[in-house]
Length: 130
Image 1 (cartoon, rainbow, N blue to C red):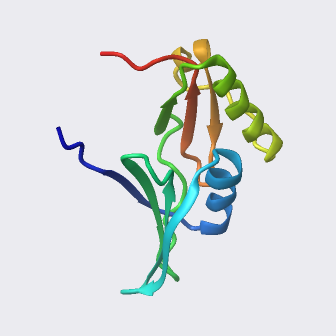
Image 2: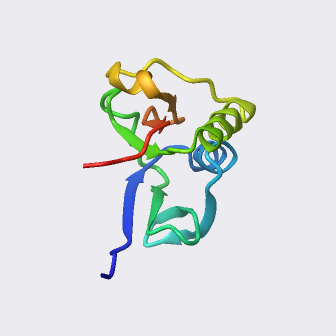
């Protein structure tokens, strides 16, 4: 079965701060970037072998603001306890402190971090199952 690649794209007012959060904190890699492409700057982040990546764009002169709610989430399931602990420690070492989840469910087995645009990322110490 061919698994499609998922791109999650959203605008930002601060690409450098997002790079620090997602690369230094979450350990993602910069896969590609562009400048002044049809009036937009952007960056694609992820892991080279993963079937997903994140795209962040910025249009100079256009403000997009912060996340509309505290419950806009990306959730990464990390079932291995040691891997999860390393991921949480990497975020904290990069200067990002956990925040209380809007939905308390995510605090039971996870840690929530807020990116510079107000969107939240949950590191969930569990396997994802249907």
